[in-house]
Length: 349
Ligand SMILES: CSCC[C@H](N)C(=O)N[C@@H](C)C(=O)N[C@@H](C)C(=O)O
Image (cartoon, rainbow, N blue to C red; front, side, top):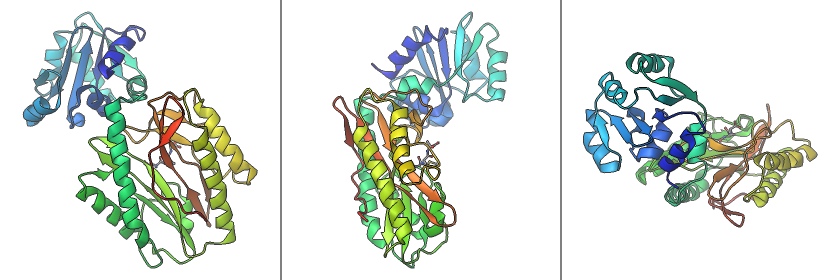
C-alpha cells in the first residue's frame, strides 16, 4: 500500500476529513520532493496537493507525481481554504509551530483544526521496497567508507581528523553525513554522543565511531568501537559484555517480536555483567527519512516488529571518567527473521 493510501485509510479512524502535512519527513514520503522543508502537502479524500514556492517549480515537476501549487503564504493558505470549508482538518501536533497554527486558524475559519500525533509512525514504520533499497545503498556506502578509514584510526590522530576523513569520503560519493559523526576516544567514550573533538587518540584506548550516510534522503546508522593498541582489562571486559548483548539482541530480531523484549534481553545481559546502570539509552530505533523514527526499541515501547521495518540494535556501556563502548548494527526485519545490512567488521577483542 502506498503512503498516500495508508494516510487516507487512517483519516477516518483519526476523525478527520483532510490532513495538512508540515513534517518534512512526511512531506517527502508522500511527495518524493527533495526539499521538503520548503513544502507542505494537503490530503483530502479526493485530492492531494504539493505546496511549494517558485524556487522549486522545475524541481517539484521533476521529482513529484503530485500536482503542485506554487505560491507562498498567505496565497498558499488561501488556495487550500477552497477545498477545506466545513472539513475537519488534521495537522501534525509535533511539527506545526504555534505561529503556523495561528495562520491556519486565520485563513481557514470554516475548517475545524484537529491535532494529530505520530502520523509518521503509521506512514513510515514499514518501508516500501524502494525505501529498503535506498537504506541498503546508504549503509553499503557507510560500510565502504568505514573500511577505508579504519586503518587510520591510531595513536596520535585527532578525533576530528577521523570524522573529517569519513565526511569527505561520504560527500565525494554523493552522500552526506547522516548526523554529526561521533568519534569518542578514551574517557570521552563515556559520552554516548561524544561528537569528534580535538582530542588526540592515545595508545591503549578504545574509540567509538558512530556514523551514517544520508543518500537520496534516506539514512543509515552504525557504530563500531575499536581498540588502538591493547586496552585495559576493565575496558576489554566491558567490550566483550556489550558485544555479547549486541549479538544476542541481533539474533532475536524477527517479525512478531516485541521491541521492549529485545531491550530487556540486551539490558539483562549487561546487568549480569554489572553494567545495567551503564547502559544509558534505549536498545535501538527505526530509521528511514529520519535517523530516529518508529519503531522504538526501548523498555516502555509497545511496538511489535514487522517485516519491512528497519531497526538498529545498539547496546552500550558508559563509565564516566573511564570510557565507553557501543556496538550498533542496522537490520531489516524479514518474513523469516532479519538481514543485517551493516557489514563493517567488528573488532574481536
Ligand atoms: C544524533 S543522531 C545519533 C545517532 C546515534 N547512532 C544513535 O542513535 N544514538 C543512540 C544512542 C540514540 O540516540 N538513541 C535514542 C533513540 C535514545 O536512546 O533515545
